[in-house]
Length: 315
Ligand code: NAP
Image 1: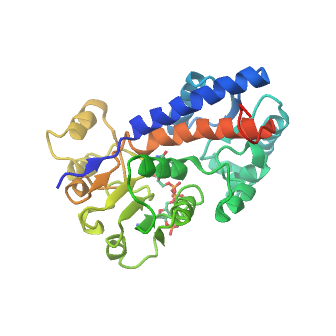
Image 2 (image 1 turned 45 degrees about the vertical axis):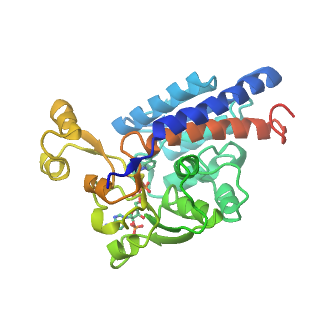
C-alpha cells in the first residue's frame, strides 16, 4: 500500500487565503493592519530560518511585522524588557519569542518569558491562561503546530471523533496541546513518551498516530497499524551520512538532496511507513507550513478580539 500524502502546503495556502480578507477588513475598520512583534535572541541558524519564514508569510498576508533581535549575550532582563515594550504597544496584537533561548539565560527562561507575554497577545498559545483555556476547551489562541495538525486532518477528511489516537511526545508546545485538541474532537487519546514501555505496540493501536519526538526515522513500520493516519511533526536536519544512508536508499530524491546540500530535513517517521500507513504527512511539506499559517490566523484573532469586535471584523 502507498499512503496518501496529506499536503500541508496546499492546506496552509487555503488557510492563508481565508485569513487575507479578514486582515483587509481589519485594516479598513481599524485604520492599521494587525501587528506581529517577533523577538529573536542569538544566532541559532535554524531559528533565523524559522523567523525569516514567519516574517515573509506575515508580510505577504498584509500583517505589520517588527523583528527585534537581541545578541547572544542578552540577559533575561533584556528579553523581558523587549516583551514588556510589545505588551504595551498599541500596534502589536501578537507577540512571538522564538525558541530556543540561549542556554545562558537559564533553565526556566522560556517559561518566564511565556508567563510575561500578555495572554491576549499570546499568538503561540503558550501562556498558562491560554493553556488552561485549552484544557477547558474554550481557548481562542492555541499553539500553532497542533492546531495546524487538526486543520490538516479535518480538511483532509480524516475522521477524528471515535478514533484511537496516539501522540508520541509530551512537550508543552506540541505533544500535550495536540493530545487535548484530539480529545476535544472526541478521539480516545494515549500520550506516550520516553518512559513508555513497549511503545511500538501502543502506537500500533492508533488510527491516528502523531509523532512529535525529534528523532529522525524513529517511527518504523512496526509502530503503525495498516491503514492508519500518521502525522510526522518532527523536523531534524541530518548531516550524518550513515543515518541518511540507513533511511534513504541510493537514487532516492532525499538521498540526492543530501548529496547536493550535505544535509537533509527529515521527520520522526521512517520512510518505509509509507508502505503501511493509509495517509501520511511528508517532511518537509506536511506540518511545517501549517504552523506558520496558524500563526497568521492567531494574529488576526488576537487583533480582532483586542479591538473588542467579538463577532469578527465585519460585526
Ligand atoms: P521536545 O520538547 O524535545 O519533546 C520531545 C518529546 O519526545 C518528549 O516528550 C520526549 O519524552 C519524547 N521522546 C524523546 N525521545 C523519545 C523516545 N526515545 N521514545 C519516546 N518518546 C521520546 O520536542 P518538541 O518541542 O515537542 O518537538 C518535537 C519535534 O517536533 C522536534 O523535531 C521539533 O523540531 C518538531 N517541531 C516541529 C514543528 C513544526 O512546525 N513542524 C513545530 C514544533 C516542533 P520525555 O518527555 O519523556 O523526555
